[in-house]
Length: 142
Image 1: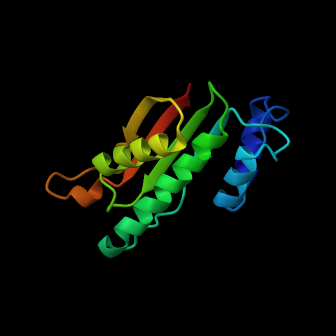
Image 2: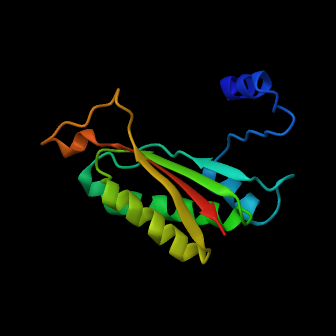
């Protein structure tokens, strides 16, 4: 957070950027209810890897869907959700499905602006699907 604040200062936007570090569910709930001082234009949702084993996958997917839904419910039209995951148990297809489920459950209309994976410094080895573990999506609310 300190680096983000410093970066905002260096880029001359520290008076327009607000950073919150809090329990995600509590903060997203407050955002939806309009309890925050300002409604954000963009939310970066980067939860920890909830999937420590394949056995934990269904519960983790449910939690990811819930967080995406909650974030989308609190973002104003035209705003963005940047969502990422870092678990080798979440495939690109499952990541896209989590987004679809979250959008559907939120009742909002959204556009997938960008769907990306990891950078070249995290190579994906052919024959080892678990090496494709970083996923990112930029979603715009309509």
